[in-house]
Length: 258
Image (cartoon, rainbow, N blue to C red; front, side, top):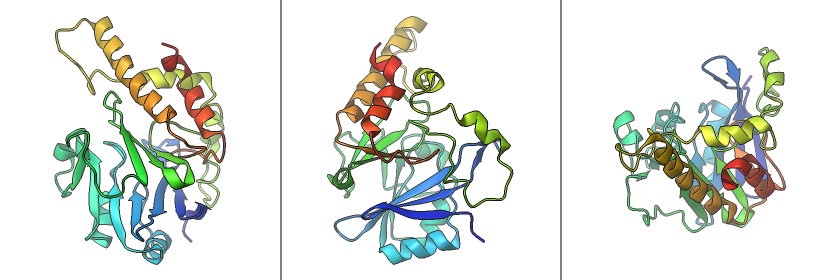
């Protein structure tokens, strides 16, 4: 029996939620998201195993035209999706150009010109986080006012993601405090900026470099906060069905306040 929970959260927006343990230990859950575009094509943020139920639903929704890697680490199952949907375009982020040479990338945020369009805009908008340690991209599905992201915001524990598993999940209770309103998440918002992700100049002093990092992160966080959304679909943890913008600004409260 499949452990994948497939659900239409709102018209044309489907989620595929599964158990997933980071490093094989931390039960953060995993989730892919598919959107039926107004053109009839399907856009997929591919972050989970392409099991038979997932495959069947995606074929039912329509031709998959876009396969998205939302950052440099959510790539374990990209090749599965590409094999199943060979005509789809693969869109990722700049580090994947060298990291995943087995994939023919049709677009890379951070490498392509900032004004590049891939074909799903403006229905789906994107914000690239240049200073994020994993070079994450946040996506807005404008018609449904839904924010979709990978490692920018967590909403743990992932009850839905573990709802069909018989695997022991005793560690999940420890994640109950790792949500957008938690003090831990507010600190996390500062920790995910990395000097390996964005260094204006190697000669800058550490303090100046951190200031530049936080400035870039703050800019991108504010850009997302300016979007019109109410729902957040994270890769890790439960969907935030309402008040998503409040959750976003709460998670990044310390960064936004400087």
